Length: 344
Image (spheres, rainbow, N blue to C red):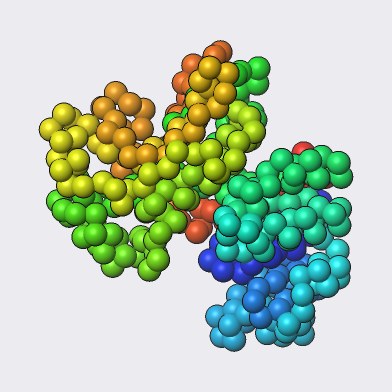
């Protein structure tokens, strides 16, 4: 089955996605009977559009050499807006991979609404829109009979949503404990192993390319809070970002780390969602966890999530430390599952 994909955003995740569908063409065909074709790619320069399909290699060359999708030979359209580009793409699925913004949700929010309103399924790696408008977007998808998937927006490559969807039928989720931000976890590990202060650990993480030049969203707990809100909305019930009690790793001192280590514990930026007296309570705070905690051994750039249920008990998944390639794989996962379960 041919699956036409339009992609908004051509940064690291978008480029890895284009490379992956090219490299894995035979596996996708043999294993799932799918031919995934890019018919539109947009970025800040404009777009490349061809309903017959774009060559990922040519697209990537245009990005590397000329700076954008709009310079793709024959099919590049400098300055074209996403709505016009999408109208000519004849896409089945829209991949939303633009930079996230948890204040406005843009441009992802408008892109997702445009795709759903145009009758296209969506796989998003951008979390801002879901943090601000989860219920609205899910309702719009439901009304149109479309899928809106977001595995790449919640601590990729962890199979968090899939775990709940495919393994926990009939279960009530009582609580979620999660380490969702690799930068914060790496900084805490560095402080534990001798980096000293938070500032020294942050500088070390920036030198190694783990932390951004402006790491505020990570170290102040905003990234973890946004992911926790999406997960809670998807798995437990309706919540918003302003309901999260938040304190980041920038509040952790060497003395706190030393005290935790003396007790055999390890400080983690832990996102938790729990049912308390009939309502949901969300916290993102540094916590000294003991060795028996299921996420105690999650170190460095690893992430992990532990879900406690009434019927299946506690299930925990931990990744090995990942980057944009793993996020692109999550996007591919969603695209394949949309094709398999929503398009046939």
